[in-house]
Amino acid sequence: MQSATTALAPHTIDRREPTPTDVEMEILYCGVCHSDLHTARNEWPGTLYPCVPGHEIVGRVTRVGSKVTKCKVGDLSAVGCMVDSCRTCENCKAGLEQFCLAFPVFTYNGVDKHLGGHTFGGYSTSVVVDESFTLRVPAGLDLAATAPLLCAGITTYSPMRHWKAGPGKKVGVIGLGGLGHMAVKFAHAFGAHTVLFTTSPGKVADGQRLGADEVVISKDAAAMAKHASSFDFILDCVSAQHDINTYLALLRLDGTLALVGAPEHPLPVAAFSLILPRRNFAGSAIGGIPETQEMLDFCANHRIVCDIELIPMQKINEAWERLVKQDVKYRFVIDMASLKGN
Ligand code: NAP
Ligand code: ZN
Ligand code: ZN
Image 1 (cartoon, rainbow, N blue to C red):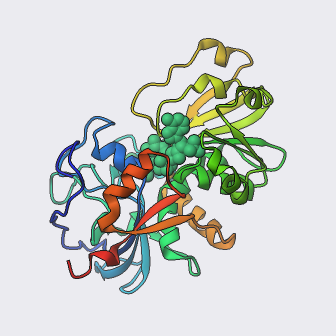
Image 2: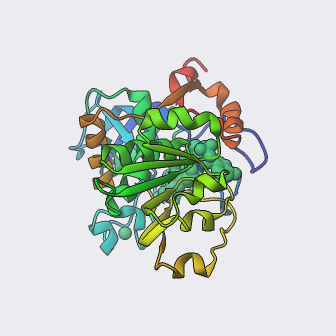
């Protein structure tokens, strides 16, 4: 995109020659995250143009540098939201590169240390990434449906693990979009009693199919009231404004509501939503490289992938409009073969 208000249109970018530790890959599939849209439209201020979004990348390796050991030409490989970090701070050393104290280099709109300028993401035909920030794609997974695991998957897996979703826990998921549908799948797979909150009555049956034990229409005040003070953990996956206090009221003593959804504007929190009874309001960002690999391997072992709608690149503007209207089931994935011959 050339500005916050123009549509996505074809554009030529440069990729660097692989360094000794770099992997070059042909991009096969790239998922469409709501963050792509927030960024491209400058809803989180700071977007650099031209903007090439995309951070849910599955590709095939086409060239490797002389020191690369993680993959070889012809292998499948994947890239998520980060392409580098300082690698020396305490958070990087702990495998939590997303919290790098020097700020991680994001796959798009990050500082390009090699070519100067800013990084360009996966809505493109190829990418060059240091091997440390590539992921192994386990065998047996549908590749297009694996791509969104690189953001929607890890962003929901990580907090579910951190706040210990599992047997005996009551876990809520707010919003059945790309992140939300993976959150439901993981909470269910980890053995938690899983409750989905949706604003869309048309998504109730899908919520149950994806693994929710209960589905609550969040606009139904009486249905919400039945769950007052009962949740151990709630993961908020909503992309737009909503009343957070309504959900905080559903937490039990010491329960936690974590935001992964990142709406454009602040979400007001009433003091008494937290004070009684000692509730926690938290946040979480994607996941580090080791945990992202763990998540991919978990998905392969449990036959978990995303529910996707595969689109050609030519339909990307239409897909974004549908995303804004909550009309996504449950992740758009761009088939890069649609660009062949262009
Ligand atoms: P998405 O596929 O568009 O899903 C968002 C869902 O939120 C919708 O399907 C809808 O679910 C609900 N929703 C939307 N508008 C709403 C409104 N006005 N009121 C109430 N609910 C509404 O988006 P996504 O790709 O999953 O991303 C979700 C959010 O997470 C975005 O803000 C994105 O930027 C952020 N994100 C954060 C991280 C991180 O590391 N923290 C990583 C990736 C994405 P229902 O129809 O079920 O109500
Ligand atoms: Zn994302
Ligand atoms: Zn660091």
